[in-house]
Image 1 (cartoon, rainbow, N blue to C red):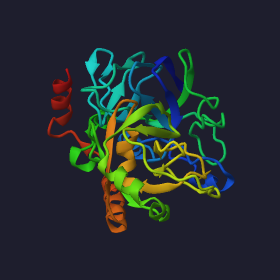
Image 2: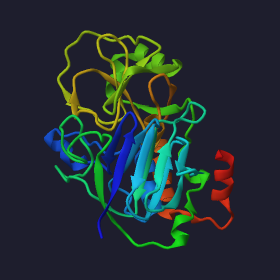
Image 3: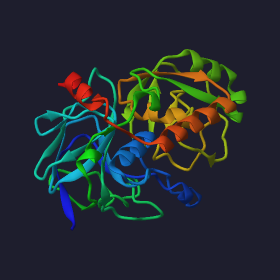
Length: 328
């Protein structure tokens, strides 16, 4: 029987996101989907869903969601000080939300972490458009009316049955990306880096800060003005993780909602396995880049795929209780 989630407070940006629309890029549609695909997949695995199923992407905190019926939930991503009514809820775990209970996310812990994902066991109703159910803010389609969620919105859910044991699962720390407050993102050089060798060198020795001009499309980075040139380049394909250098020399790191083509020089691309680390940054956060090679990039992505294939663990050791005690 269908039930609902009531959005009491959405925080700075709450949207419905899924695994994205990679096949739609050929039509000029951004791939979109979750900023942190790994955390989305884990939240869904904890809830017993397929890894790319639609879920709620919650940003920075200030969130309140009421459950209209008992539901099995999975929560993964940044520690945004989650509470289920008055009880602390450990991140990277499953739980059973009683009917009428309220999930509250108070905000970042230790000034780190930007996004977490709430998955509901069953089917979260979302608008399917152009090959995906995630919200495309630029296009105004997908998700919930093609927009960010607002206070007063009600999301329909077709919940799946569950047992008490389903609400005591967790995702081990050793099978998560190396989340941290100031990540060093591994990058590969791309052909245009040879056009701007000084910019490449400057990129690797600078600690950058995410500018206020940051969105799901990309982060503008402050900290150094990279050398660029005034040559006119034809537009070419770009992907999430690409680092563009516009004429002002202030680099832009493209993210989930990145456009499909661009004309700014691109000197590097963040490897896929490190995009979850970038997704957890908010304006004011700091980051750096370190060069790597293609073999390392492939190995890192394969390792994450293996982590996801293994699945969650039952809380036989009391890990959830220990984490909840530490949070409380």
